[in-house]
Length: 196
Image 1: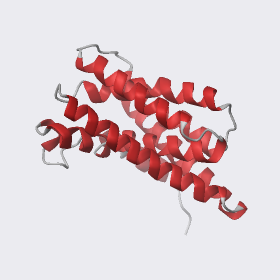
Image 2: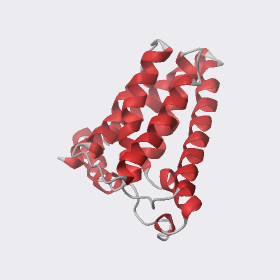
Image 3: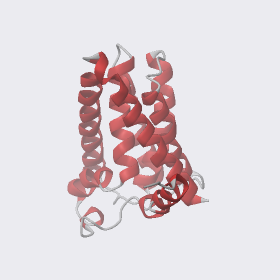
């Protein structure tokens, strides 16, 4: 049996438009009502945000001794972006840059790209601002919602750090970095294509 690779690729990409809508209602709408719970659930209900936050931890654990710097930069600038979004500031390219973050950080993971910790944190932090803008425009204006969002983000970074650490333990696990990063980059490409 011969598989038509082009047909499979087009079929997979056709599924991505639904993923661009980060919060599709699978939480019954609670992320728009409850303060702390709203903020905590928000990063978990969108595939783009979830994957990006885990990737930050994976890259940090695999590629820098200052493993805490990029996750800390991401969480801090996510919060800053959310505050800006709550203030009503919008940037037309926000969703494009959120999708691009999956592509860029996915490539960083796939290539096991070694950067200085500060350089990696700056690249990752720049994307975090736009993740924050997306969250802030949707969250209620409360400190509890913001704290829930930052705690969930830190938890996702810890999951990513754990995955990244496991990938560094054995040379046989190195190809998994390519799978994880490549898959995430493909998701980013799919999300970007669905926005055009």
